[in-house]
Image (cartoon, protein in one colour):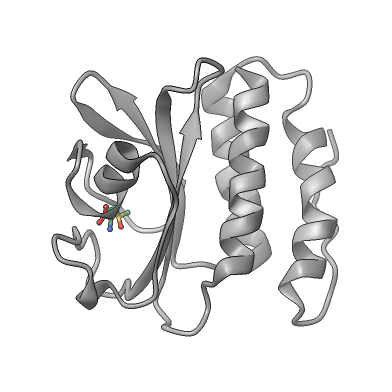
Length: 161
Ligand code: SME
């Protein structure tokens, strides 16, 4: 495992993701512990993009429970169908929310977070086992490119299970 990330410089996020993805694969390969891998993935994503909050919620019985993350403290439990995360769990597809004020039922863990992307993470049997949640304190940061690459990272996690 490399000791530090080597990231493409500049403002083209596709280039940053392209340089990041193989490093994320190397970071988690050979490590069977899910918590350790999710913790490193959250740290690597925060380091690469400087988002306000990035982390995981994991399905435990009837709730999503807070998992490894980087950023301010957050809500610990989210019911299925509630908020952006619980909606992604119920509907099994990613959501890009450019303005959280326009998402009815959004759960505000922090009033600084104004936009967000949540992508589902599937078990090999296609059940949702958790979500990857990215929050920004800016309106113009998160877009379809992030969703595309965050879904690739979600598939990387499924491969590890
Ligand atoms: N905003 C999320 C809750 C999680 S926090 O933002 C970290 C939601 O509505 O599901």
